[in-house]
Image 1: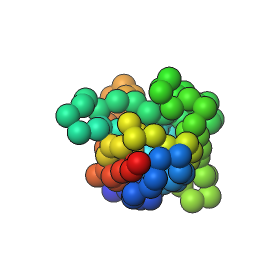
Image 2 (image 1 turned 90 degrees about the vertical axis):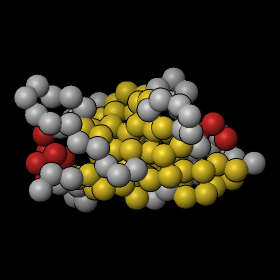
Image 3 (image 1 turned 45 degrees about the horizontal axis):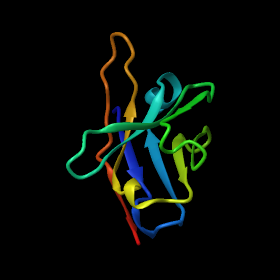
Image 4 (image 1 turned 180 degrees about the vertical axis):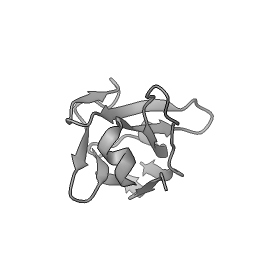
Length: 117
């Protein structure tokens, strides 16, 4: 069964760090570009970072230098390490497969991140 399952969200103070993890089924992990998106209250969902099968990465300008996306091949996870968190990083974070011709797009259920002052 194809699935994505996020974990690691929570409450953190501004300036702190948090690590999110996305567990992917084997067929997804081995064949798809995976990404983290987020949706803040009242805002549209936006790309945070993506990583290819060979670990090339791409980041939103707002998180570049603070967030790192990585793949753990043994654990079949895509992780998002977040440092220097800001209030505006508060959002529900989702793991997603990036579009591939002829294949469905999958979303995880989301994990909330709240950054407090």
